[in-house]
Image 1 (cartoon, one colour):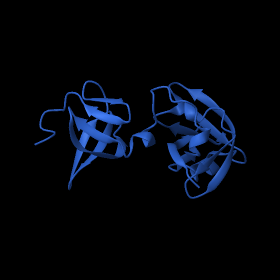
Image 2 (image 1 turned 120 degrees about the vertical axis):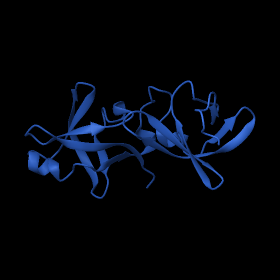
Image 3 (image 1 turned 180 degrees about the vertical axis):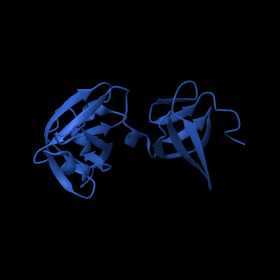
Amino acid sequence: MNLVRIGRLGRPHALGGGLKFRSEAPEALLDQPRVYLEGLGWRAVARVEPLGEDLVVYFMGVESREAAEELAGRDVLLEPENLPEPEGGWYYFQLVGLPVFLGEEALGEVVDVMDTGAQDVLVVRRGARRLLVPLQAPYVEVAEGAVRLVEPPEGLLE
């Protein structure tokens, strides 16, 4: 079974069994009849509601805050073919494995993408080293199956 992480369940919301949903691509959860919860298997989605810039997800059979607490902190996964087209051009899982270049020089390979809260960071393997590269302009550009360092942060390559 090939599944990709689309986000993580946060804390329960209110008393009716809802959970906040944290994701770099919250639209991936919309219109999904079911999702895979880490360690628990497939769960039917009852409904998804907006809450400011976040989403609250309700699962079938989870009708109290106490029941929702049991699900908090779990990763939410889907089959890649069930994902909608991403608004930003790509999902994080699609970046893992891409080569990283500075000009024409190959620097390494993306091995992970971390959500640090303030900004997302590419973890790039360069030999035995790990480089942490902010995933934002003006530092990087993602195009044509590669990540290009446009303006590396000071001290990154030292």
